[in-house]
Length: 383
Ligand code: MG
Image 1 (tube, rainbow, N blue to C red):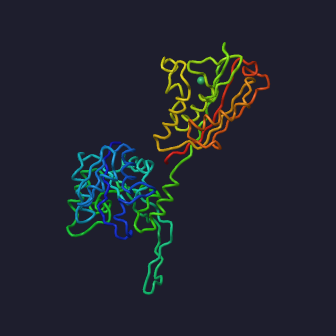
Image 2: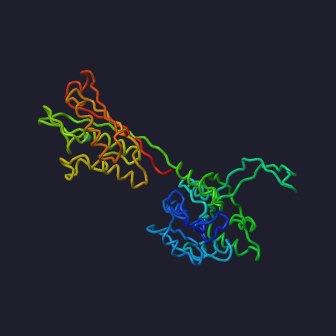
């Protein structure tokens, strides 16, 4: 679904203690506002309008340096005026879906945006929110409890909140002068519009107090997933006097036949990493019909897979390769293979395993028609 986003970053955030307004402060090494803008861009936003204080243009340019499809708009006296300034700057028509988001909720995920957009396929308006889990208490004098209200049917509103641009503008036009809404859903509700609740994300908690930053750092660190991939490859023996396995040349009575250097170990490992990130297989990236890869050293295939992981902000955690052959003997070369793989992958030696086995004389490896390799790779990616 096409959509535009307004990220409200115009507040002064004095409750969050010293260090400047919270939206410009770093969470896990990245300005809070940048987390949300990146999430919207990654989810396919046509444009992200960032509403900022009058004097914050330099802060925004620094915090969002290098990102496409965003621009800054000056905010107003109140939050709702800032939102209206942001809406006025959007290029879309009345039917455009606009997601409005607080910059102080940095840990926005593609999944959360996706849930909201999915709801907006049928609902005219929808917001992320969480059902209340804690029991509610109302305080009286001396902090004594005077009431335990029912929490049945109560939710905590989060952002993003999603609307059709025309309907939201009309609702704002009908909003009473001098009153300040606490969110945009309230404006639409007051105008008689229906707004759907969509399950939000505890990690979207708003940065309000200084201690909230530590919690967000923890959650940001946790917001990564581990993926596993496996690969298999086999090559036939042919005339020659050496083979290359896991990037190491070994003298042998035969060579391995293949379009590239036929390094089955590196090919299986490359496929394992591509598998972990859902990027097809080695043949998709380096077609055997392409003359560029004739006789090519297979390190470049593995390097390419590692670069694809890095481009997603991920890293390879560990790899485990098993070579299956009667000959050559692998054991004398295992350490050199581990060191070569560790070098290509940029990993500690402890994270790189190379093992070998025979098939007890059975099958194509047993008959020494060729050899095979299996590999597993674990990859960590941003959630
Ligand atoms: Mg191969």
